[in-house]
Length: 625
Image 1 (cartoon, one colour):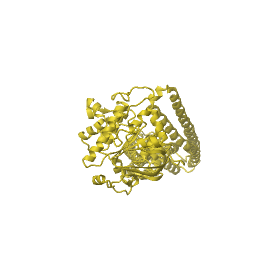
Image 2: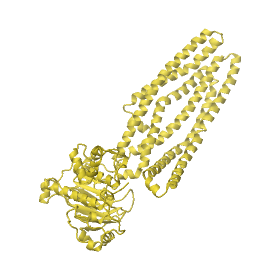
Image 3: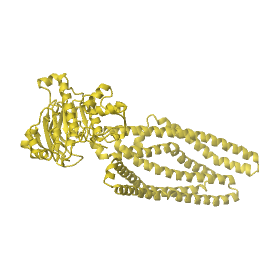
């Protein structure tokens, strides 16, 4: 907690000074109140003088009004400090999370990060607000009341000296057992967040498989686990107030008993006894509030440690000290001296601290303007392989080079501007089609946006929308079909003219005709770029379809994280049994001939022999909702 205060208190320190200072002035008036009441009793009530009672009553009202004014100022300072620091912490958390590579995101998990940026920061905010408002008030009120009571009578002050340690002992015993539970509560909240996120994001799948009862049971179990911890904490915490009030009331009884004897002997007045009881009550009530504050601060401490864990986690992928990379010149391409667009040299990768590599010694080279097709079974490492290119993950060993420079030496912003990637899962944010397309280049013109939509085969359906580029997009693009979402994400990757385009199985919801038209348009874009003297577009296509990769200049066949075959379509048919098996699962043997145009990713689509004799979808019928 102190680390967060040190880190984010700049700009808010005046609130931490003004607020407690006002609270101290309020405490001063609270400490004077029992003395005024004592005078009112002894001088006014004892002498039957109504004038004295009214004067002291007016004084009490004035003190209350002034104290309330200082309280309001303190409340405002607490609100400004807590809300301001909470906003700063959330902003820093969000910024740090956006710096994380996929490795850190995998480590923390999305549900846990959501809980930390919401619930945990809320706990910290509450502790800050109560710290400004109450942390000064109750300890000072307790100490001040004790001193004032001892000044009235030292013998009766022994009651304080006995009552206070008893309350402190109970407080320590309870808190020592509560702290571990608070950390468990936050972990249980993470679990609830995970189940909720899975259930809501996969609600269609859940309903399709009639698994509602199963999901309800998962959520019920997670909720009851969290509730069990919360109840255990509540039971422990509930001991504090009854025990504290018991000690306090016993202390008051002792004061009245001993004080009554001293009043009979004339050692004390009735007003002083009342003042002593008020100070006793203030002291022990202050200890009760301090106990409640410690509960809040203990929760906040557990939450702060989780927030600090994120803030102190250094991203494994950084570009500190990396100078901008000089791109190849068009003249180098024409002379054939330009560096390859992509080169991997014995690249290995593993998730976390796993001993077995997910990718093992992958080596390949792809020239500028060429197309690389990556094919293989599910879980063979295709998506992980292409994630190394824009440096979403770092290799464990070996190297990955883009345009002749190791990706670890690129500034990340420049690398990810040069490399456009379309992930497996089409992701759109709420807004408009235009706002989604402008991600890569905020200054792109409408002509550039429409050009990207034309290549992505999305221009036709966007033109049919009433608002065109300004048509609304719901969260996740739920108001578009699966194929439409994929085409929009492809168009988004094309805006800003990337030099290397990665299509990670991003045409899975497209029919064969649209898929072929997309590849043909991308190839024409590359050729047109070369004709105008610009660098040609290099393409990496990850797909389960042989028809999508057979015309590629280079095909990489993946199997269990290793390269099972590397070459052209014809070469792999002759040398790679796995590739031949994949082809025969999708095409007739007589259709396994040479690719129509090895250098054209947009080659005419071969006839597809669907083993289930299903008709090919029309261009507008893919991904129906």
